Length: 123
Image 1 (tube, rainbow, N blue to C red):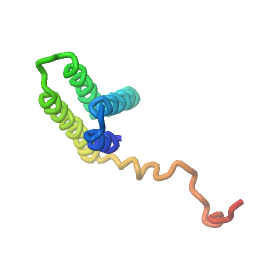
Image 2 (image 1 turned 90 degrees about the vertical axis):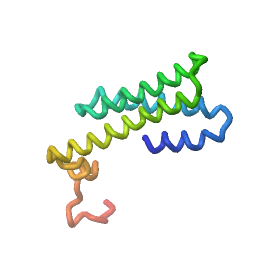
Image 3 (image 1 turned 60 degrees about the vertical axis):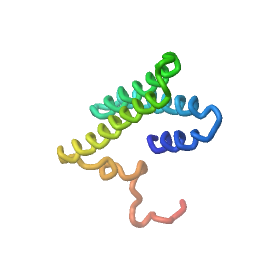
C-alpha cells in the first residue's frame, strides 16, 4: 500500500492537477491505516496512522494558509513520512525482539493443506 502511494506520488508530478491526486492518495492511505489501527493491537499502526492523518492535515493547511509555500508543506510531509517508516521498522524490530514468529510462518496459505495422495487429482 505504501509502495503504491509512493508510485502514485512520483507519477502524478507530471500530470496536471497532480497535487490533488497526491492529496487524495494520502487521504486513502490514512483512512486505511486508521482502520487498521482500530483493528490491530500493535502500537506502530497507530503511530503510522497518526502521522498519515497529519500529512492530510498538512495538505489542508497548505490550501488554507496563504503564507505556507508548497516547499514548506512538502518538507513537513517528508518528515511525517519518516515517522511512518520509523514506526514500520520499529514494529518489525519489536516483533523480532519479542521472539514472535513471522505471520507468514504462522499462516503460509489460507487454504487447507493437501494430503500427499490428493495432489493433482483434479476431483
